[in-house]
Figure (cartoon, rainbow, N blue to C red):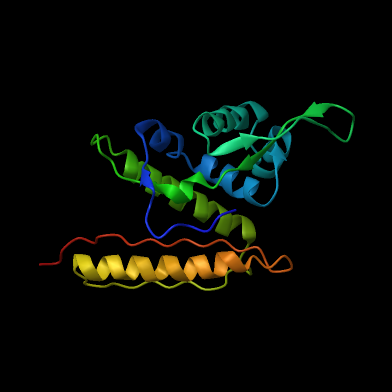
Length: 179
């Protein structure tokens, strides 16, 4: 899987934003990152009906966020199709050009998916969490984002096969002015 670029290659389309505006879809993308999973495997892992998972998988395939791998024989001889994340979400800017609030819905879906992963991992799985407040101009914000993305790229490129699988979330959000 490629490392995230310094800057998004392009802004997401409305269709792509709609596809990413549901937390279950982010969970599916994350689960299909390390290995290809079938609809049944995703359904079992997420505790959601197979028909529901299939609807979300189809939306992600339609927008090229998931790709179907060749059909394989399952454990009982039935044919099954696994799916794998394409990594395209790393190349998209989440800009809401049409004013529908889709970019914010994507942000909230991403947060909800991360929250679900934290809960699924259990109380002893936490590693590090940092939260704070800053006051930065546009140039400093751009520098901070560039430096964080460079650091993330450095560690993504290590891809240590025996390492612990970890999830991360970087979010820089404008806070209400207190004046």
